[in-house]
Image (cartoon, rainbow, N blue to C red; front, top):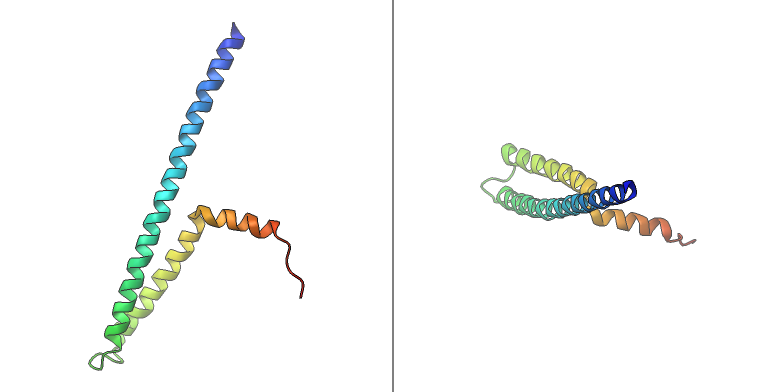
Length: 104
């Protein structure tokens, strides 16, 4: 009798854990997509500021130059943050470890 109770409890716990893992993976996938969208927006913004900075009217403007530098810094920080959460990079790291390095 107690064996059946333990077995049923184990099945319920396993079902809950599988559901939880699915939710975590789904959220990480959503985070990956949204972070890529954010990086694309930052790239568009950076190119827009660059084109404005290169206009003869604004060329050399320190405010726009500061915006360019700040945007580049934000993009770098977002890329670092994104690398921490990308699931594909974990698979690539495993592949890199498993592949022997070519000798020159």
